[in-house]
Length: 304
Image (cartoon, rainbow, N blue to C red):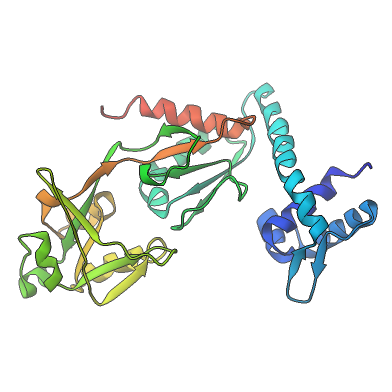
């Protein structure tokens, strides 16, 4: 049966967002317009797709069956329309990336301004969060992940510095009052500022030197969510609240200004830099292809 594709888009957005208001926020539309579009789609199809209450909007069994088939198809339609951008002088459209908060802070600032200047018709949406998720399921075109978090069967492109480290640091005032640790195990006796992932995991601190690796279970007066509250931990450390173990590049401004003092430097854990990854089993949208090519170009200038 013929059905306006705009109505199908409305159904998909409401289903993905789990409600009219959230779908309106994500799409820049309004809830009443989306509600009307879904109602008209149901009328034309002759079947109810959502159970509605004053608080919830939930797919019916028929609606769930439709989404299973419709979501991949709509993704292909969107990608096919985006491919038309190859025939423009410059590509346009929306590019959605799911990235760790650390990447939004430490990797993307060196890339995004120039990318947007070079491709003024592309709208870039960055979803930055600490929890690991299936980025393709949530409508993103690609993601940035560190090596241990990469999904299977995806194409990866290095992005940003290839070698990174964690850095341990505290304020000179704290270290003068409590002493300077000489070995990672000394941290057990110190006030440490820790991070917790959205999953609830609060990782041990890992160190490595001359082939020796060890994990230290630290404790202290402050726990912050990895992502949104890391800057609070940095400011607490600067104020003398305890020892921090974080990305070296994140702490570099405070280290260079002597607000923080590096400790245990020979033990800092080194790890490989992040990767841009995407699924090449479907048609790659023009904005994503432009970003991939841009990142590869920048990689040519990275130190080997």
